[in-house]
Amino acid sequence: MRWLKSVAASMLAVAGSASAFTPENGTWWNPNEPGRGFMMEIQDNFLFLAGFAFSQNGAPLWLTAQGTMNGNARFVGSLTTYTGGQCLGCAYRPATAQVGAGGPIEIVFDTEVSGRMTWGGQTIPIERFDYYLTRTPGDIKTEMMLGEWQATIDFSANTSIGYPYYGDVMVFDRVDRGPSPDVFDGCRANNSLDGRCTQSAIANHDASGFYQASTREHFLVVNDSPTNFAYYVVKTGTYQFDGIMKVCPKSLSNAITQCLQSSSYRAYPVRGQRTASRNFVTTGSGPNEVDKSSRRQSISDALGNVSDGMDNAQVKARYGIDLDTLPVAELMAISERVR
Image (cartoon, rainbow, N blue to C red; front, top):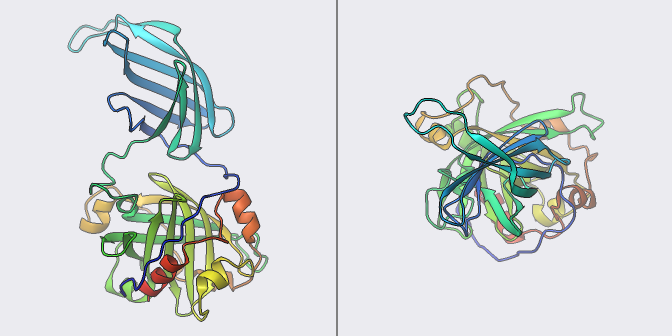
């Protein structure tokens, strides 16, 4: 793979409304207030929360709340506290619930992994806790991309395609700390059963990406075919991402300004899921999906380069991704990085 040749800062804020998303189940906390946290699980539109906190005298406090959500991004309920429950090793004794004793609570999710919680007269930021995805101090959402990701691209707006969905499999198995920002490298695997970056996969379909902190977006570039790159601009949670994909010809003198920033080349919605762990793609041992269907090797073959997707204004309105203002130098360098 080629090394990044140059890096230039080109950061700007996200504007526009966000698309629908699914807040992630797991442990949530306020990084500025370690020592308490909240376990949340969402099933369909029903949310259950269990909090471990402390009362004013320092005694441990166990709290729960549950109920249906308002839309996909807001929950309003009341906190129940508990006393007199079973101790460790003791005979079973049911706890006494004080329904509503903890007061009202409101949670507004801003993304899959961030939001705001209002409780006890305070509003605090909360985010999904990263237990083990990031293992290098100071890393900013680069290592978290290591693993296998399967993506579904919605080509339903393209009238030339008989079936409206296309799948992609991307494996990222290493991080390069040399460039700035850091770059994660990998490939489009030869098949989704193996989930590895073999020599042939790297030779024909290598891939790279980076994270832009100012817009909270990951940029992925896949060597789609001998004549085309596949560009992904996505907002990533712990095990899922949402965003858009564009296919750009390699023949363009500047694929960023002439394709990504041009509505002449249409964008298509994409949603991705982490389907194998970092440990699995690097060592062969770790969580992964073993029953996977095969994927075609070229998006551009399926697409036929027909421009029936979203223009840049539609992308901004739906996803909050501004394709008219991108980190051009960094993306050009990534394009040079993949073959």
